[in-house]
Amino acid sequence: MECDLNMSSLQMNNDGVLLLPDGMRVGYARYGRAGGVPAFYFHGLPGSRREGALLHQACSAANLDLIAPERPGYGLSQSMPPAMSSTRHRRWTEVIAALADQLGFERFYVIGISGGAPYALACASVFPARVRATSICCGLGDISQTDLRRVMGLISRAGFFMAARDPALLKLTYGNVATAAARLAPGLAVDAMCWLNRKVDRIALQPPAIKAIFTENLREAFRHGAGGGIADLQAAVGGWGFDVAQIASLQLWHGDRDGVVPHRHSEWLARQIPAAQLKIVAGEGHFSLPVRYAHEIVQTLVSEFPL
Image 1: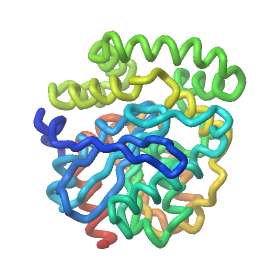
Image 2 (image 1 turned 45 degrees about the horizontal axis):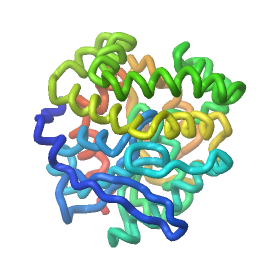
Image 3 (image 1 turned 135 degrees about the horizontal axis):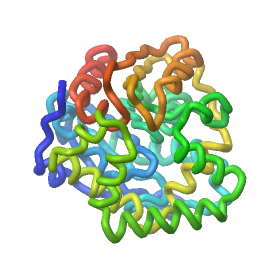
């Protein structure tokens, strides 16, 4: 089912900031139906709380109260010290547990998109009693695995290579260029992103409401610079550091035309997690899948795994 977002989706959020016991700030926004069944949305790489607007209507229809937190270094969230990049996935599980406690959520769903997938899987792995079920859309696999890195596009491979071998060059190229584009002309940056991807993604990103969400998402992702994206890249090349094999309630969605994160990543995940349900969607790309299938992804999650 194709998503029928309108411009009001951008306004249907309530921003919040969680102050952790150690003083760290974590920003988030709420979408869907207030007071509904709780769920967390983990944005892509780069991304922000604004990305959750893509699922606003789908979650409203499914009676989900969707919380879209920002990882450290994005939007309203405070950056972590560089020395903590190796524990970024584990640290994120602590953030979500604290946020869930503050909001009064005992159990909840988790939805991860693209580069947010490892963080969703970390939560499902670390506290399975609280995560009822997890849905991953066009998810990034463990790119410390050489085979998964090799199937990705040149731009993605270059970013991961610099994160592993030359962080200073990564900051100079990705950091400076991406930050300038996101701050000065985020709309043009989204246009460039469209033309760097396949036709199915370009078409999906054309509607004004969808482009507005991605434009605002990009602006917020680089609100304080490229620290969040760089930290995500460095954490990815360092390996996950958590075991996914015991995750019992997981759905994997991937388009067979995905040129950003090829569907071999979800196929690899399905082999690591015997209980996973994998659906490869013919003709869909990296951006078109969450845009066009938002309702189906959410409805399938709640119907297959009722809270």
